[in-house]
Image (tube, rainbow, N blue to C red; front, side, top):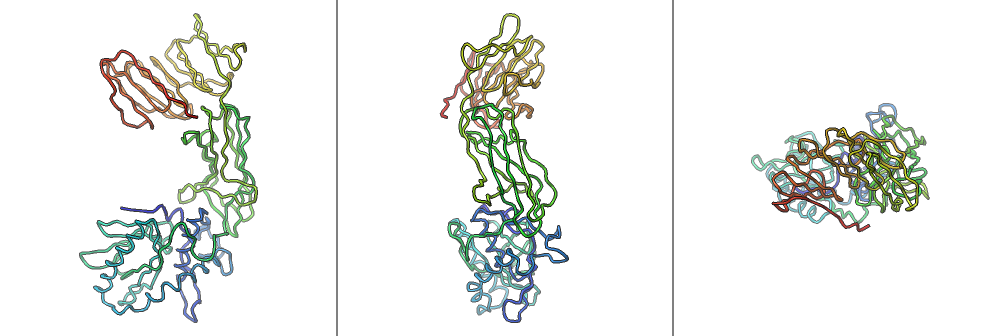
Length: 485
């Protein structure tokens, strides 16, 4: 199976092709802008501009009208794209010199290899479909956008604007020599390539200019530029469209220098299930009391979760606004920690002659990593704080034998030899990594364990990565990483 990265629920229009147009003489073209909707959706896709969120189910177009009304901006653009397709469909929509089921099917078999080759080259075929009304059925001709194929069985994956938000499949039923449209054998009888669309080249008139949700002001990041310092984010979103817009939630996204997702530091998804009226503005903000764990470039962006559960980036609309901000966080002042003979942990930050801050008492062992401090108390409980020296402690685990900190990871080895590791927020979920463990180490994105049989295994990358055996007959283990930032 081969698919290009077009997703109908994300990149296709969210209303049905129920346009009524008298665009060719006195012929009423019911469902008549299929080519325009296909080409327009493609242009939005390659221009990296979200299609409008408008839909008929929420009565966005008023009254009983299921589509944008005459002379609206989005309808005019779709209509213009429809005209662009006409020169390429006319020669094929006339009777091609045959009209039997076998002849139509043979045409499909021949065209399938053509479509397959186009997709293999990374291009999109705009497909013409001959309707079943040519052989006594009821369905008329149609145009769709192809974004994938499979060879066993032979089938094409299409954006069909008559079925918004859904993946539609055209299948060659070799046994019965017929074309199936989502399993139906009485819809279309054959297909043909109309256009080969290169994603590096805009088709039709120009880049789509109509959007609904865009950035009115921002995105701004307020920080002193130090790892672990308070940081805030703010952006104003506006509906620039002519009809209501819809989202499930907004997200100020954040990636650390390694590209890891740290959205939790901006507050995560912010629910906004209500419609947004034309010209209405929505302010989205996020605050983090202690942003980041390592120095380097951080990237903030803005997106929304659509009603189709697709995460979509929101474009900058007004001059001077940006949809993405890259900002650098320099290392926090160095810290020194000590555990005295009475079980008290003191930490100082910055200059060597800085004052000590009492962090905790009744401590068995402790660890420092970036702007995090962790302690294992005499009762087997692990607590971790993040940010300033006077930040609040967060309980992490109990019945702990030993623990370690590394970047945004916390590892605990319990009294039964089970190793659990969490990544990200202090209140994140634990992942069981290994059992029968004697000791362990964390460093960067690596986890190493020494089991009770003297074997050392190490994994690298995600928490669910596979283990790699390293050595046997071992008494201790240590890990280190090279910081390339």
